Length: 115
Ligand code: SF4
Ligand code: SF4
Image (cartoon, rainbow, N blue to C red; front, side, top):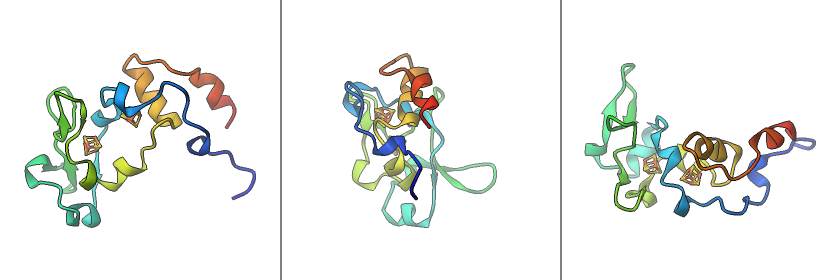
């Protein structure tokens, strides 16, 4: 749609990378749909939420059960749920999670004003 600015389409800010991040976004709740389940996410990594939906299991600190704690990368990357695929490296939401975790890469308030 013309006239809209999507931060996801702007060049990834320097220094923002999943490889220097420690999986900040992998503590967000991840819900799965039938397509995600058909992709073959191991059942042991899943659990049912209080409304009967299927979500990625989280540990007591909130980390997704699929996070490899040695590398802090996704251990099921080719089979990861769609919501994880849609969470774009360098997007506003990405940098917000990094900032919450203490990794400040860019002035988020300035970016928000550009919307
Ligand atoms: S998408 Fe962003 S928040 Fe998530 S792991 Fe990559 S750099 Fe970190
Ligand atoms: S499935 Fe992978 S990308 Fe998605 S939250 Fe879990 S570890 Fe992160």
